[in-house]
Image (cartoon, rainbow, N blue to C red; front, top):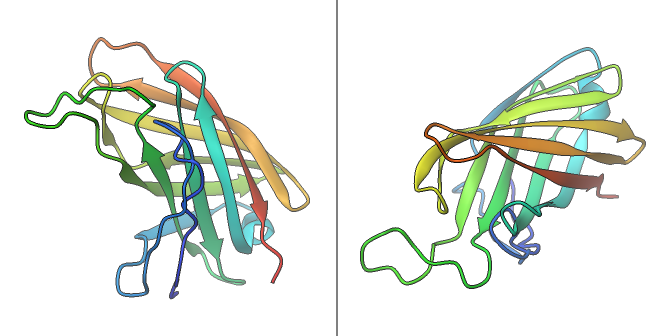
Length: 165
C-alpha cells in the first residue's frame, strides 16, 4: 500500500502535533490486523495522543485498505517543550517516528501494541499498549507505557477519526 503523506499533527507523546511527511519510498512498516471486526478499521485514520504524566503528545496515522489484513501506521512523538536530552552533545531530545506493531478489533474494541522504543525521559526502552472503542468514524481510548527499568509506568489518551475520501 503506497502512502504519499502523513500529517505532522501536534507532536504529542513528547510534545505538540505537527505535520510529518512520508513517501511511498519509505512507507510505515506493515501492521498485522486481526479480530472479527478488522473491516471496521478500513480507511485512513488520523488523530493525536497526549499524556498528562509525561507532558508529551503527537500525531497518529493508521491506514487499512478494504479486505486487507495488513495496515500501515505510525505515531509521531516530539519531546515536550523544554525537555533536555540524555544523548551526549544534544541539547534537546529528537522527535521520533514510532511504529505500530499489531492491531486487533473485536466487539467494537481496538487493542494493539507499539514497537518497543527508547523513551527520551527515562533513557530506557519502553513498551506501549493501547485500547480504544470504535464509535462510527472515531476511535478513542487510552494507552499505557511500561519501561524496562525502574521508571514509572505512564498513561495517556488517544483519538483518531476516519478521513472521508
